[in-house]
Image 1: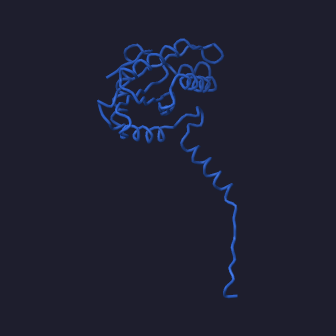
Image 2: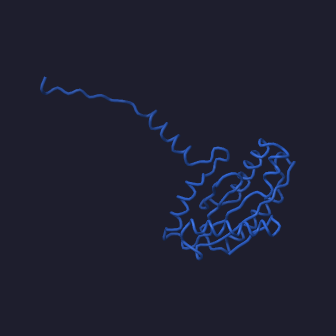
Image 3: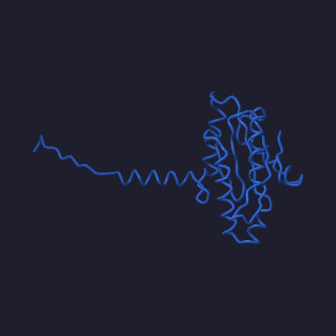
Amino acid sequence: TENSHIIVFIDITAHVQEKEVLTKKSQIDGLTGIFNRNTFVQFAQEMLLSPAHEYASFMLFDIDHFKEINDTYGHDIGDEVLIELVRLIQQLLRREEIFGRFGGEEFGVLFPVAQDQAKVIALRLLEAIRQHRFTRGKLSVTVSMGLVDNTFSNVFETMFKEADRLLYIAKNSGRDCLECR
Protein backbone atom coordinates (compact mmCIF):
# COMPACT_ATOMS: atom_id res chain seq x y z
CA THR A 1 0.00 0.00 0.00
CA GLU A 2 0.90 3.58 -0.25
CA ASN A 3 1.85 4.00 3.43
CA SER A 4 3.83 0.75 3.69
CA HIS A 5 7.59 0.59 3.99
CA ILE A 6 10.08 -2.22 3.88
CA ILE A 7 13.08 -1.88 6.13
CA VAL A 8 16.05 -4.15 5.52
CA PHE A 9 18.82 -4.59 8.07
CA ILE A 10 22.13 -5.98 6.93
CA ASP A 11 24.84 -6.96 9.34
CA ILE A 12 28.05 -5.38 7.99
CA THR A 13 30.20 -6.31 10.99
CA ALA A 14 32.23 -8.86 9.04
CA HIS A 15 32.77 -6.39 6.19
CA VAL A 16 33.95 -3.66 8.59
CA GLN A 17 36.28 -6.08 10.37
CA GLU A 18 37.72 -7.29 7.06
CA LYS A 19 38.31 -3.70 5.98
CA GLU A 20 40.12 -2.96 9.26
CA VAL A 21 42.35 -6.02 8.78
CA LEU A 22 43.20 -5.02 5.21
CA THR A 23 43.93 -1.43 6.24
CA LYS A 24 46.29 -2.65 8.97
CA LYS A 25 48.01 -5.06 6.56
CA SER A 26 48.60 -2.20 4.11
CA GLN A 27 50.35 -0.14 6.83
CA ILE A 28 52.49 -2.79 8.49
CA ASP A 29 55.56 -4.64 7.27
CA GLY A 30 54.52 -8.29 6.99
CA LEU A 31 57.75 -9.76 8.38
CA THR A 32 58.62 -7.48 11.27
CA GLY A 33 55.24 -6.09 12.29
CA ILE A 34 56.38 -2.45 12.31
CA PHE A 35 55.31 0.38 10.00
CA ASN A 36 56.16 0.01 6.33
CA ARG A 37 57.82 2.87 4.47
CA ASN A 38 54.62 4.54 3.25
CA THR A 39 53.01 4.58 6.68
CA PHE A 40 56.23 5.72 8.35
CA VAL A 41 56.56 8.63 5.92
CA GLN A 42 52.94 9.64 6.51
CA PHE A 43 53.33 9.71 10.30
CA ALA A 44 56.77 11.31 10.09
CA GLN A 45 55.53 14.20 7.97
CA GLU A 46 52.61 14.69 10.37
CA MET A 47 55.03 14.86 13.30
CA LEU A 48 57.31 17.29 11.50
CA LEU A 49 54.40 19.62 10.71
CA SER A 50 52.82 19.40 14.15
CA PRO A 51 53.27 22.44 16.39
CA ALA A 52 53.33 19.98 19.31
CA HIS A 53 56.77 18.77 18.18
CA GLU A 54 59.25 21.61 18.09
CA TYR A 55 62.13 19.20 17.65
CA ALA A 56 62.46 16.02 15.63
CA SER A 57 65.40 13.88 14.60
CA PHE A 58 65.46 11.14 11.99
CA MET A 59 67.80 8.16 12.10
CA LEU A 60 68.24 5.83 9.14
CA PHE A 61 70.16 2.61 9.73
CA ASP A 62 70.84 -0.73 8.19
CA ILE A 63 72.49 -3.99 9.14
CA ASP A 64 76.15 -4.25 8.23
CA HIS A 65 77.04 -7.08 5.84
CA PHE A 66 73.47 -8.40 5.82
CA LYS A 67 73.95 -10.03 2.40
CA GLU A 68 76.69 -12.18 3.93
CA ILE A 69 74.28 -13.36 6.64
CA ASN A 70 71.75 -14.40 3.99
CA ASP A 71 74.43 -15.99 1.78
CA THR A 72 76.12 -17.87 4.64
CA TYR A 73 73.18 -18.93 6.79
CA GLY A 74 70.19 -18.65 4.45
CA HIS A 75 67.27 -16.27 4.16
CA ASP A 76 65.38 -17.91 7.04
CA ILE A 77 68.18 -16.93 9.42
CA GLY A 78 68.30 -13.49 7.81
CA ASP A 79 64.58 -13.11 8.51
CA GLU A 80 65.15 -14.21 12.12
CA VAL A 81 67.83 -11.53 12.48
CA LEU A 82 65.45 -8.87 11.14
CA ILE A 83 62.65 -9.93 13.49
CA GLU A 84 64.98 -10.10 16.51
CA LEU A 85 66.52 -6.73 15.69
CA VAL A 86 63.09 -5.14 15.55
CA ARG A 87 62.06 -6.67 18.88
CA LEU A 88 65.28 -5.50 20.51
CA ILE A 89 64.85 -1.94 19.25
CA GLN A 90 61.16 -1.83 20.18
CA GLN A 91 62.13 -2.65 23.77
CA LEU A 92 64.42 0.38 23.85
CA LEU A 93 62.21 2.93 22.08
CA ARG A 94 59.54 5.04 23.71
CA ARG A 95 55.93 5.04 22.59
CA GLU A 96 56.11 8.43 20.83
CA GLU A 97 59.00 7.41 18.58
CA ILE A 98 58.08 6.24 15.09
CA PHE A 99 59.81 3.07 13.91
CA GLY A 100 59.56 1.57 10.45
CA ARG A 101 61.14 -0.70 7.89
CA PHE A 102 62.11 0.93 4.62
CA GLY A 103 62.93 -2.30 2.83
CA GLY A 104 65.43 -5.12 3.07
CA GLU A 105 67.58 -4.46 6.13
CA GLU A 106 67.02 -0.68 6.19
CA PHE A 107 65.06 0.92 9.02
CA GLY A 108 64.18 4.37 10.28
CA VAL A 109 63.30 5.97 13.59
CA LEU A 110 61.85 9.43 14.05
CA PHE A 111 62.48 10.84 17.50
CA PRO A 112 60.41 13.80 18.76
CA VAL A 113 63.53 15.31 20.37
CA ALA A 114 66.50 17.46 19.41
CA GLN A 115 69.52 15.81 17.85
CA ASP A 116 71.66 15.77 21.01
CA GLN A 117 68.99 13.71 22.80
CA ALA A 118 68.42 11.52 19.72
CA LYS A 119 72.15 10.89 19.51
CA VAL A 120 72.18 9.52 23.07
CA ILE A 121 69.31 7.15 22.20
CA ALA A 122 70.96 6.13 18.91
CA LEU A 123 74.25 5.31 20.64
CA ARG A 124 72.35 3.26 23.23
CA LEU A 125 70.68 1.32 20.38
CA LEU A 126 74.02 0.84 18.62
CA GLU A 127 75.56 -0.61 21.79
CA ALA A 128 72.55 -2.84 22.54
CA ILE A 129 72.74 -4.30 19.04
CA ARG A 130 76.50 -4.90 19.40
CA GLN A 131 75.96 -6.74 22.69
CA HIS A 132 73.02 -8.86 21.53
CA ARG A 133 73.59 -12.34 20.11
CA PHE A 134 71.08 -13.08 17.37
CA THR A 135 69.42 -16.33 16.30
CA ARG A 136 69.69 -18.16 19.58
CA GLY A 137 73.06 -16.68 20.51
CA LYS A 138 74.89 -17.59 17.32
CA LEU A 139 75.42 -14.33 15.44
CA SER A 140 76.89 -10.93 16.16
CA VAL A 141 75.31 -8.13 14.19
CA THR A 142 76.20 -4.47 13.85
CA VAL A 143 74.46 -1.55 12.19
CA SER A 144 75.47 1.72 10.62
CA MET A 145 73.43 4.86 11.26
CA GLY A 146 72.85 8.31 9.86
CA LEU A 147 71.12 10.95 12.04
CA VAL A 148 69.75 14.36 11.08
CA ASP A 149 67.37 16.76 12.81
CA ASN A 150 64.67 19.15 11.69
CA THR A 151 66.96 22.18 11.88
CA PHE A 152 68.38 20.80 8.62
CA SER A 153 64.91 20.55 7.06
CA ASN A 154 61.31 20.16 8.14
CA VAL A 155 60.50 18.14 5.02
CA PHE A 156 60.80 14.42 5.63
CA GLU A 157 62.08 13.51 2.15
CA THR A 158 64.93 16.02 2.52
CA MET A 159 65.78 14.66 5.97
CA PHE A 160 65.70 11.14 4.55
CA LYS A 161 68.18 12.00 1.78
CA GLU A 162 70.58 13.59 4.24
CA ALA A 163 70.31 10.69 6.71
CA ASP A 164 70.96 8.32 3.79
CA ARG A 165 74.08 10.29 2.83
CA LEU A 166 75.27 10.12 6.45
CA LEU A 167 74.53 6.39 6.57
CA TYR A 168 76.86 5.86 3.61
CA ILE A 169 79.56 7.92 5.34
CA ALA A 170 79.18 5.58 8.34
CA LYS A 171 79.49 2.57 6.01
CA ASN A 172 82.63 4.01 4.43
CA SER A 173 84.09 4.84 7.85
CA GLY A 174 84.25 1.20 8.85
CA ARG A 175 80.60 0.51 9.74
CA ASP A 176 79.17 -0.11 13.23
CA CYS A 177 78.92 3.62 13.91
CA LEU A 178 76.71 6.69 13.91
CA GLU A 179 77.20 9.72 11.67
CA CYS A 180 75.36 12.94 12.50
CA ARG A 181 74.77 16.26 10.79
